[in-house]
Length: 450
Image (cartoon, rainbow, N blue to C red; front, top):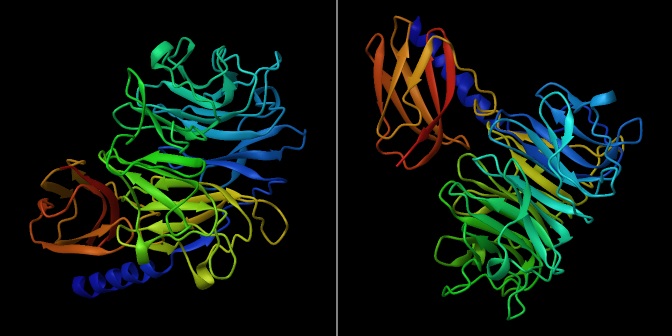
């Protein structure tokens, strides 16, 4: 009887891997363009842009997995008097927003939501758009955009919890003569900035702050970036690689996505494996399993904007055919949540004419994680072995999948309580572990460290 039930469970599990699809979660009913989409560490998604609430205020909205709702309201409202361009979160769960909106002194500022109300973060004291904000693991907040210092140079400002200050000064200043569109921080605390920042050769580049000075990332390498136009988006992965995309093109005239591996810049893909985008890349992000996602103005063969995915070997459209996004207009921003679901927002609208945030869900036990209290997995992260503890007095089976749903290994366990799973053959990354017994299926995310 146990064997029959196990086969049924496996059949259900396998069938679920073919149902990944784009959908419109909830009813956001945004009345204008979505400029910013962000997912926090707990799985909530946020959006902001040129849309307003019923009082005419520009707002940040939150998707909690069930409904969309304005963050704040009444006396706790953001009361933004212009659009929201960028959203980020810190390690403790605070949410930050910035853009074109200003305070009562007509200064652009970074707003912070602590869970109860919105407040201004210090006194940034700038009078121009804030295009990008980000947070590091220590809680420092960074902001950049169209604002300048007293020398007339564009710069990155840092909030250290007490005050805002220019990142680098004097001979160590960024001293950009051009707009900053995007900033990012890596796990080591290095800060990156890009946009229309131009080097002495007239090429756009990614600038790096290493804690002491600003330099051109890969400027002296054998293969520099040498972007021939603006950079819209940069991001980093856990290995420290830096990615950039925007309005720049490769030697074939295709818009491309570049990666800096610590030594050189190279196109992600290339030749027949190139993304071969036919227009701007507006936003890029990294999935929990190392997949790279990109979106923007570029279109597929049907003339529809889409989210492109790099799986380590090739680029493909995320969802296709009946499962395609079919945006039909520009995608401004994308983000990935902890369950690997991808969110996208922009100019595109639903059938009712409202702008919305689209969600791509991997319905394969990855997006819908359900770990039984009777199953414990430790350590996690792990190096070579994981112990699985279950109170069920029965045999069980484990399956390990990539974050995208590819089965890598399966093991039958014959012990009663504690069982060891050998993961020494898995490379560094995030995987999904299924524990299957006669009571059901428990799915957990595991991290393999090397």
